[in-house]
Image (cartoon, rainbow, N blue to C red; front, side, top):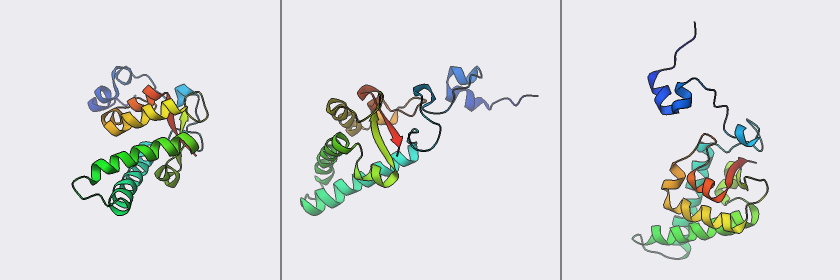
Length: 153
């Protein structure tokens, strides 16, 4: 006797899950390993890295070094955050938070993403909503638009 999925597992997973189609693991369609270095950087690592970067940019740099007052610190922090992302991801493939959590940004075709992709990804990430909508490979809309993916180191 096969176990039937709960009704929430069918509609939350979409029509393919409702039909019982195995979707595989995140990154399988892209030829990535399931676990370990080179596998898709999962949601927990990505959120952790984002929080480290945001706190660093808003509190340490915007408020501490630049002396922004509490009313404007979040906007100044957003600017610092965008610059950090463009400079660090564009040159070494990771921000400081990403290094702490062992992930990096790569182009879908492999290697470091081009600067144009990094700028597109950063601007969409700053809007937040594109990053919250992601596919089965855990690539947000910002990653899809920039043709990038977050991988484990």
